[in-house]
Length: 145
Image 1 (tube, rainbow, N blue to C red):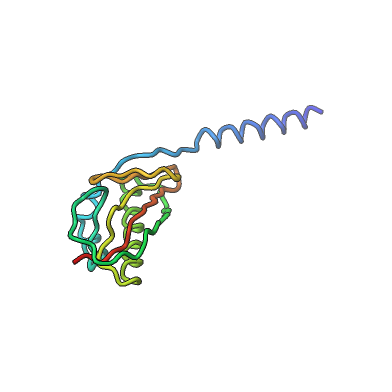
Image 2: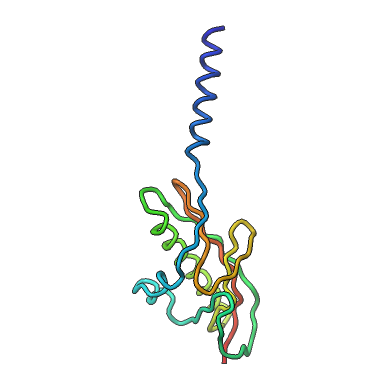
């Protein structure tokens, strides 16, 4: 009986410690900080991007609204480093969709963290934990005149 009680107690403590170590911090990070890097300029070239309510030229064709949901390894990285990396991955996915459909821009880009749409001209939302960081974006692929 003592061994069973000890085993149950040990298992319970182990489960509680793993839950207490879990983390899901949601932060706002600068779009400009990522887009001005050489890596972003190289990987995102060929398509224009407009966040939130940023002004753009007239839309000549609309292809639809598309979403991304990217995750990345955050282990051993700062939240900012992991979030900027996964944001770039999400942006690359939007670029690929735009090129695939024949668009030249993605407009009205918003964060879509856990189904909660937020619009900002300057920041994106990222959830960072001890092991994984995630960014979800939504944007409309268009052709601008």
